[in-house]
Length: 280
Ligand code: NAP
Image 1: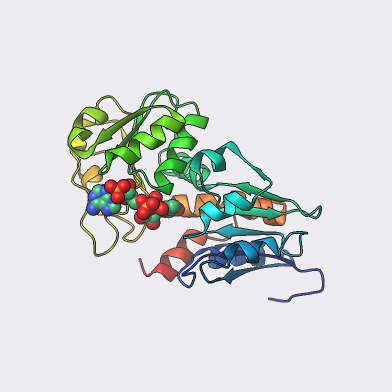
Image 2: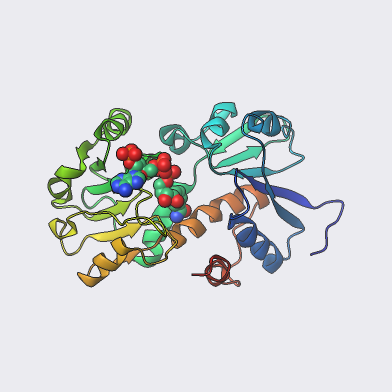
């Protein structure tokens, strides 16, 4: 990589940050496109994030992806934010404009819809209700993306039903506890696992997937393992599936466009690079 006095700088901030895939994806795209740019990891102490981001006003750094635990603080310091970010109550993209203002977006939901488009071609979010399992930041972002895409009803199913109800109060839809999951799955066109259940070393989700129509597309946001027990069960029942790695790459695409002003090149297989880096 050759840097110059004109190199455009962007990056990702979180804590911990060492396992982030974003530097691998963005730097591979930069190299393949021949862009004079660099994408770096930043880690700040909790409590110092806001001061760090405020210090970048003015555009010396083009923008940042923001990951846990700073997504809420990132939204709070922005001067302008998209519907997606405000409904998700979290920003994963900050753009530092030259006029000193900060713009925030949340591209996780776009990444999720992009993953459906790639791995379940023809899936139409307007064609029926969907179930989102979980009520954390990822679930809220997914619900907002489905609402924005014109989905007729988003059903939130969560272990702690009060958290599901909070999302429904903000975005509409219906809230269910895990014991009512079968009822929530009736007639849906998609089921998205946005809980952390199924992560390597943790128990999978115990959900009666057979209550969903056979045509329902099943997605898991967890990408390590790439085929979670939830996706394996969906595949075994003949359903189409979408994995979390496609979403991870999907959220990076609009981020790259924000930071470097063009779409990432298609000439580099970043999925293969991520699979290698993650040891999947
Ligand atoms: P979070 O805020 O911590 O929320 C976790 C959710 O999982 C909560 O709804 C929690 O329920 C539920 N949960 C945890 N363990 C459970 C279990 N054993 N059984 C049932 N429910 C359980 O996390 P998040 O930030 O929303 O992220 C959720 C997942 O999405 C994580 O695995 C994250 O890695 C993944 N993610 C992936 C991408 C991607 O690009 N692929 C992007 C964002 C997030 P309670 O409310 O009852 O505690």
